[in-house]
Length: 210
Image (cartoon, rainbow, N blue to C red):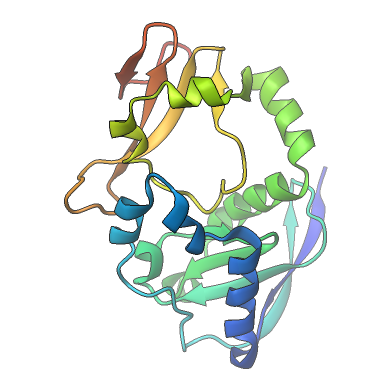
């Protein structure tokens, strides 16, 4: 099934209020202060979270294969903000590095729209995760069984803020961590797995993951 979604780029006069609204909705930055992984995540985001001055207001309609509830707001960021990584913000926001204005990528837009859909229709997506991929929500005790050394290095992802941690096949908890504790880089992270059955951390995907 195909859907149409309107994506709007606000005028510069509204950008700061949109960014403030996103922060109010997801507490991406302010919430790091209360996270066990907050220190390393703030260190990896030393450059300010700033909109680019090179954008102009516009609106477009995009076709997508996932349902979206309402209009999506798009802001182009300074290429150094959040290490230039595309991501979603708030309930219906997409943040892209400015170079994607000059070199548009429909694949990137479609990827971010999936994350927006996951926020809008979370119960539908969780049902899919469970039936098709054998995921479920990890219990607090399961997540806390991961040694603190790994939880301290967890990369906070704005696409998944507010969503529970997952466990695959009732055994493996995937967790993306920074590779370098002293000089963390948002682009230098790798997903690992905590095996709840044998209490072991591994960087190698378990059998059947891919």
